Length: 70
Image (cartoon, rainbow, N blue to C red; front, side, top):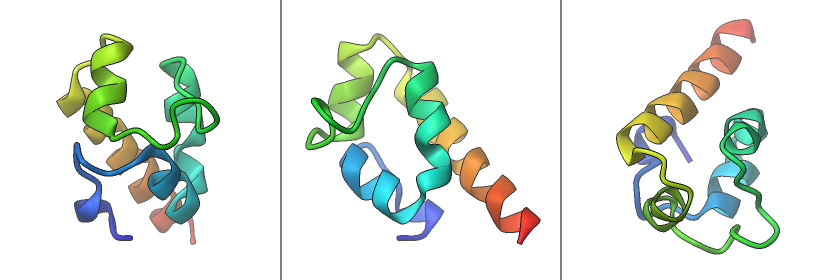
């Protein structure tokens, strides 16, 4: 999964599997892949009262940082 493929309909577990470097982003917002992992990002963002655009941006930044370090 490429970063541009991370969208509101992407499941947390899909993101974590493809990009484990995003785990700190999810943890910072109180999201986990255990209980909410099978939910789409837009639903999880809503439940945790996090702006979806902000969450997607943070996830993409985490992936980009990892790519630059390789």
